[in-house]
Amino acid sequence: GRGAPGDGQTCARRRGGESTTRKANKAGECLQESRFFSNIAPRSAHAPASLPTNIKPYAMELYFVRHTSVAVPPGVCYGRTDVPLRDTFGQEAADVRARLAELLPAGTAFDHVYTSPLSRCTRLAASCGHPDAERDDRLLELDFGAWEMRAYDDIDDPRLEEWYADYLNVAPTRGESFAMQRQRVAHFLDEVRRRPWQRVGVFTHAGVVLCAELYAGHFGCDGMFGHLTPYGGVVRIDL
Image 1 (cartoon, rainbow, N blue to C red):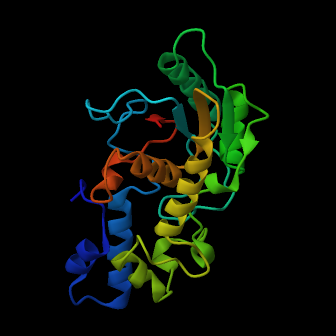
Image 2 (image 1 turned 90 degrees about the vertical axis):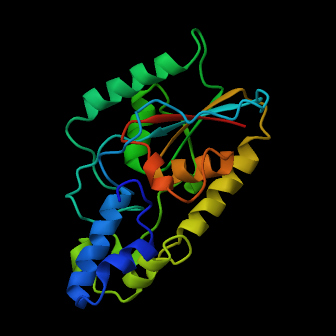
Image 3 (image 1 turned 180 degrees about the vertical axis):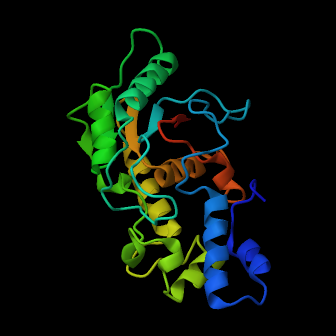
């Protein structure tokens, strides 16, 4: 269902004994249901997951900002590719600025700002007043390797079926697995949390935000795609 992560077991059950082409189409549908790169997510644009009440206040607040919507046709696989933004960027960026103003305490600003090197993130960072945000490759979206910018229905790589069966650990051909992305995001957070800052801004991608929330314990891998942050969404993580 749409609340499930769209994992390989779910896809396998739905495929049954169908043809290879039909299987690929069904696999694409499962990915769309996971909403990994969808324009729509069930979560509000600026509602961070609540923390357990028995955890004391933390020393650092990190505000993860997902980039605005991209000009990529539906059903096309993209991650590491530097894709263009939609013509609605101006209004979407204004909405992000308003969202940050609501979330940040009055009269405060970020002590430091990071961004993914891809233009869909650096443009938003600059629009929010941070043209010199520190670029960090660990904030890049998942690398889909040989599948980048190909329609899912046109990918005839046998590894696609393996990936749908175990998307957490299997990497796309010449790409990286979600586990690999999660590891580099954890390394980034391990480093940042040792800095003497109180508030940090991070302009990045949906997959990175998921990894960060897993790191913070907001939720587990089961059902994590139900927590996907929408375009222009902001998630606060306390470390």
